[in-house]
Image (cartoon, rainbow, N blue to C red; front, side, top):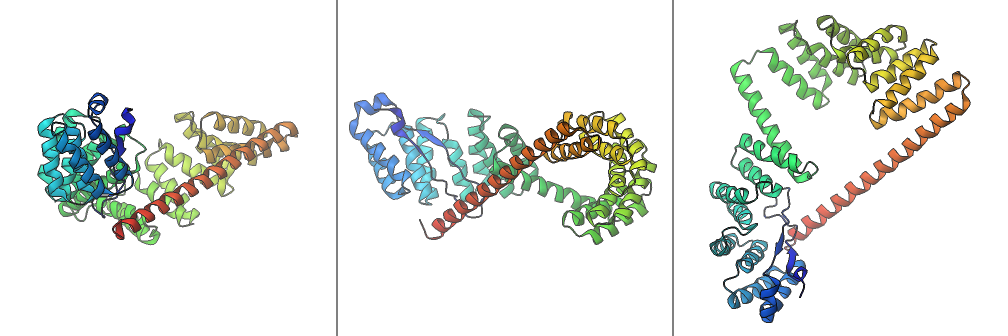
Length: 407
């Protein structure tokens, strides 16, 4: 009998409705050699695994309990009993089963993880931490264990401890959405705590007004953000960065003249600011001031020789001032500097227009064809991402409906 017959996955079902993460661990049942010598146990395990796959935890529990009675020395069977009890919401009994499994095999993979989650479900956070710590000693790079350690720390109102575990988990699994969700929440709570302490320490500090301005800007409350940035500048007129941030808010609020004034003020305070040179230069290109933009963009590129967006705007500015030959060179450089997909598309499109002005029709067609190819691919990717999000949302809705109906 093949070992795959004894593997099943726990249902993607949350132990607590408010927790937006699912735990799914592959578990290996008793060894093939044991199963071959005990066909009755093997059959019970197989039936139990099938029941778990079908979401029939009560039936699975019955099969696993019978198997354990025949083979009480097998820790893995007791672990599966615990999983069936978990799915039934019987956390105290689950804990007892896990403790029995660990007594037989203290190094049983996953047992302390589930024990920690069970204690978490009972709000016994210290015991949950102890169990998860034991699992981490056995499996220090297990991202699920690290994530659950962070979840427990969050529940225990210790976001700074949660950040440590979740940062490590995110480093090991940078695309895991559950880990990223909890990590973001932990960092947000730490930030809020820091800002609260900052406000309590010095409520009239310009830093407080800057933080408020950033919060308002994030919430698209530009009027409030502008007021707070202006107050911060009044309190700290020589502080670099404030005019730059205020300029960004003015730009988002469709006030380009005010944005230009703020970027200019930033550049006076910090003549070496690449961001200020680029933002002021690109804005002046958009506002039809190409001649004034060129030295600013060249200044930014002197400090960052592969600033793709700066090359794109420089190419536009040079085209606008009638220097198409230099414009071609700048746009080609933008393409070579590994820009974002959006800047890459815009560079090819702009390049096709400049080539037409130079009567280089073949090069213009090639640049336009590349632009259209990139745009089609980008549109297809966006459509796929939208469909994937809709499918994930549909699955979440189905799981919620299933849980709500007691399925």
